Image (cartoon, rainbow, N blue to C red; front, side, top):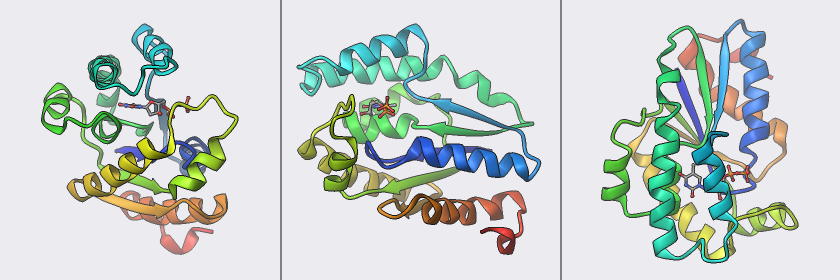
Length: 192
Ligand code: TYD
């Protein structure tokens, strides 16, 4: 199973992925987590470019679109292992939401695996900006408003659970477990 977490910056993806991983492992599953951008050379180059002052220009966003697709391609074969559940922090759906240019980005990512389940952590943009202020953040409010709208439209194309991320971590985690449980034959009443 390939579970993808998406959401704007500060939505809590990494915390929730860690909590889901622990819970699944306690239920006897083997779990591998993935993060995009990866720690490959391409992923490092992406992080450098994201810090540039011109990162939001169309030219740089298109360049990032190409690099994200290449970075992603480097990890696709890992997903072949059927004995594990893969949980990914972002996917090609981030490229569609952040870079736009749906047809072109979609084609570049033709061989990227589609999620079996997409967990969209939906967060108010103002909360996102407040949560990430002072951090090494890449995004601004106007840009994130567009990204959030893109995500909600994109969600319609996948098996997706939209989770309100503007609540305490345990409440959010419990909803995520309830969303995942039916796919893995875990008893919903056993979820706290
Ligand atoms: P992020 O997961 O937010 O990194 P960190 O946890 O280090 O803050 O990802 C970095 C940024 O890259 C984030 O703003 C979203 C952006 N991004 C894209 O624009 N396109 C993509 O395809 C991906 C995977 C990420």
